[in-house]
Amino acid sequence: MKFSFRNYGLSIVVLSMFLMFWIGQAFVGRLQYNEEREERGQAPLAMSEYLHSSHFWEATGENWESEFLQMGAYVFLTVFLFQKGSSESKDPDEESPQDKDPRAERNKPDAPWPVKRGGWALRLYENSLVLAFLLLFLASVVVHAAGGMRLYNEEQVALGKETVGLAGYLETSQFWFESLQNWQSEFLAIASMVILSIFLRQRGSPESKPVAAGISQTGDED
Image 1 (cartoon, rainbow, N blue to C red):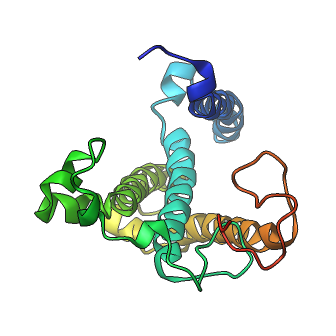
Image 2: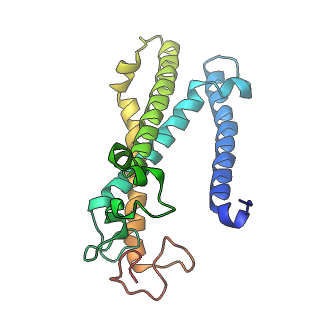
Image 3: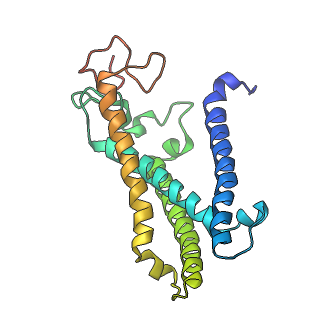
């Protein structure tokens, strides 16, 4: 199939922005961390060293963790919760295409192979989006915790205090402060999208209802 930016532009632009901001994080993060090291009388890190540092990976894991939690929780909650009038919700009064039994579509030529096969493959596939976000969230928690533990122990050593293991770090207020301050902001963003899309519009965006749609119109209702 011939490549077309028009067909794949959203993924390309979003991933490009991710890389641009991640590179920016690395540059300014190194400057900040080297200032902290200088205050402790430690040598500054080169960029290659910083990219392997606890400071870089703690911050990265902390942010990825909250994003994947947000997306996974949102996908899961929209299975059975509704918001009348929101573009982000199924209509509580109508059957949604997402709720139809995929087994009735197993003979369609373009049906995915798990749908055609049925059984455990279909059960896994029909929940695969939430499961993928769950695994990404758990992996990000590991990155956050491992990087955070190393950074916490560096600070403890500099202060002449006792270091902790991974389990000990998970019990610290620092770990939970880092997590919860991000989690609350993610769910505030979700709530803003759900509620504002009831009343406000963005012409041309599939995340918005049509501009002429009524306040009570929900989701992609015609």
